[in-house]
Image 1 (cartoon, rainbow, N blue to C red):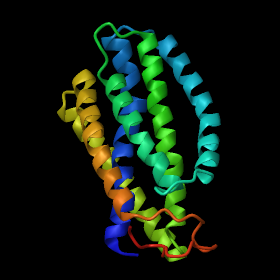
Image 2: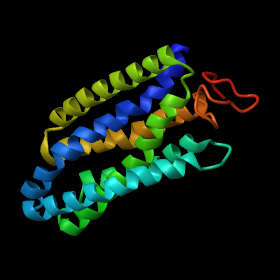
Image 3: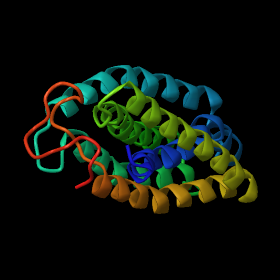
Length: 211
């Protein structure tokens, strides 16, 4: 598989990973310390959100398996997730001064919903564009390398931004700007096969070729 194809597919993983660490590490203490939200309240909100994830992830996977359209099953869901993630990340990470538990719970829920809309089809897409074991190994390696880079980048952004609310603002700005760019690159360069690689490919589409 061409390196350009592997890089184009894996690029969204960098930005999604940059969102993951602050979301589950820095956001809760920020709301507790800088917005006065009760830790018990935000902890309860997180429990309910994660319980919803246990349902939403398999449902989104099932729906993406059955989504028709010229854009493709996986790519359509990933494209739809971009505005959800960009807007909800900004609202969750850069809340108004009077933001309370209602604001935090709603926008954190929307961030994780957008995450599920992108992440579940994204991983399935990686398996489908690779026709064999070596190709799947390459796809997975590139994707996980981007996850590592994104995790490091988010830490650097958070610390460089000044930690707390300023650090979260830096991360949110990065996600809002970078995610549409990298997803657009993937949608343009990486195909979305109608059937899993190694089963039966639709006429006129060769796995590993861009559109």
